Image (cartoon, rainbow, N blue to C red; front, side):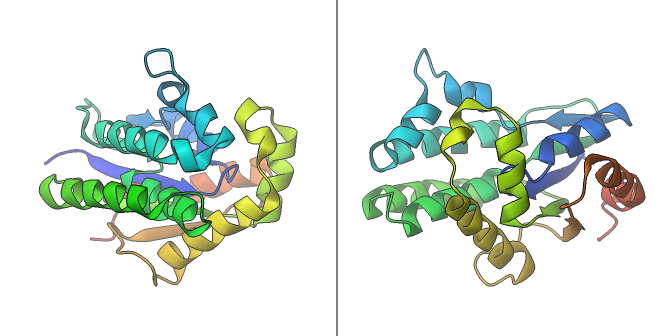
Length: 214
């Protein structure tokens, strides 16, 4: 039996990093954060910054690379029994590519090509996910948290953007009206402060690590 794969999903500043750090410290778990360092430096280029500057031109460049690096995260070999990932190849497509396209910032041809790639990958490569943990937050909470942390690329993120990402997540993981679910979903309300969140992770620990939804 391969390792369990658990994907931590949620809006920007929903607390995914804190959740991963918590589980990283407390068990035999291999944690994979989003490979942002790669997105900032592909042989000396920064497609992440380019995408923020001009999404219509660089959206497909970044998202093609995101798809590749997330696939690599899903498939890389690990020695521990549990793989815990920040987001997934699924949310990259269903949330972020979808948002670029719906907001008119990605040409239809780019969206079509990315979709063909995604469909081919998910049809031909087995990408097992055992559980999605959805850190459910209000866009306003995320916006407040963003103001308090200083990641350069995030300074330009408006509330409207967080609202549209939130909506896409809700449609996918809660209402289940948009895209197929690759795994069962465990929802953890995540509008609380750090101490309360750590307590919630502890409370849900068995559920998460057992991924006992099968």
